[in-house]
Image 1 (cartoon, helix red, strand yellow):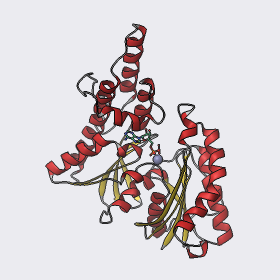
Image 2 (cartoon, rainbow, N blue to C red):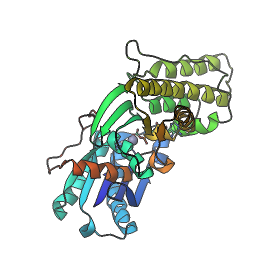
Image 3 (spheres, rainbow, N blue to C red):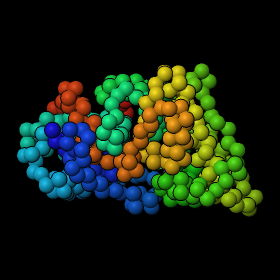
Image 4 (spheres, protein in one colour):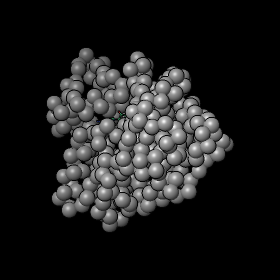
Length: 336
Ligand code: KG4
Ligand code: ZN
């Protein structure tokens, strides 16, 4: 079964054709990041406009790259939640129009579920149940994937998402948007022991996260130094901050795995590209004899191949949308 996936939840316009949830026949991404960089973050109004301009061409290209016409597609899957509402609406309305004109079934896909599904593409042998750490610019969740469409939230951030904390701290360190990627690179040359940040915890909720205190403490450190006319060594700051965020993610994720008694772990979302997070979890899983799965680097960020992958399993579970499908800025992953 061939699914055309469409993604427009943030600042990437993407379309892809995926066969049976696992094989990517094509994947096209038009990134707006260079434009948003000028403003230090995503400007929602600009994102919506660029999606409108790009979506037809990106979809055409995805079909062309797969050497297929719409007549050879079996269903259309689209990200409908969560995300920037104006941006989501572009993809949703386009997909609805395409479904109506072709008569193809339309399958709504939750953005975080699709991030998890990036793992099915990279690791054809991976099947639920497994425990997944989903870390993106907007979300940080520990999710028990009981089945492809049955998910249970085990832990979540109480304030900033991990990606958001990386981006805001990186901005304070003078790095361009999106800062998480740059911080990861610069941290390679720094001393992670140079600055000590406490590992944040949430009272009574051992699997929940809190990153806003950590973010504020690094921003205050930088501001205090600059008021005294001092400059702090950015590689050391980056390495220390990355260590603190990754330390918190890994600590709670491993604690949750032990508590649940599951030995199959995966990571997903933009921050799952973080080199320290990947190597630390690989190491711990190897030591414990657990299986560890992560998406290829080109599937960690927003893309439509993951939408086509999750769309397949949502389709098999019977999920269909009509022309009344709406986009939602917020939607819990276990209800999507
Ligand atoms: O999943 P994603 O592409 O978009 C959302 O759904 O939010 O995640 C984007 C986030 C950004 O905050 C970006 O800085 C972060 O992922 N990110 C990273 C790395 N690569 C991307 N954070 C840390 N280390 C990286 N290597
Ligand atoms: Zn995302």
